[in-house]
Length: 197
Image: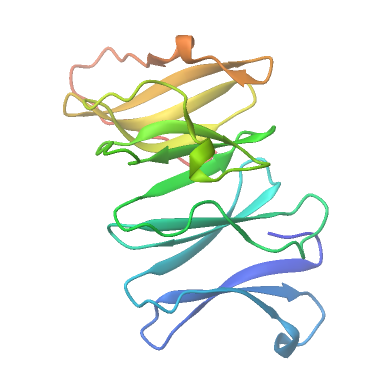
């Protein structure tokens, strides 16, 4: 997930819980690998992934109640350090992706949003004080996942007892909240979701 010579990988503890993120340079000994992140709290698991844009490496640490995200800007160097989005705060969960430009899109339960709200933060300073709501929170709409594309955003969730997908246009590099709309289907009952693209 790094450049052509670098990979990032997870290491498990003795219970098989992923708890470390390492950086490995291809062609070197494993003893030379660099530990980027270590989660010592056994209630938390660690995951690692790359943004859709390919620019960022994300490291997530989470439990059923709380999450914490870090990112590494891979644009200039795979050796950039991890930066925390928001330090662990019990009860706060969030996930994010890069919008392909100068911001992160975050879906979170911040401010008692049980079903998650959709927010934006600038890459230059993504701390929680800079999170801005993209669309108004709706307690009847649950947001589970978000996929970001050049010209639109796809949001997966639930409403009215059914899985749903909502779309929002991106115009001139900005998300157009006024275009937020639900995809409609002819069937009365159905199941729909966003998959790997």
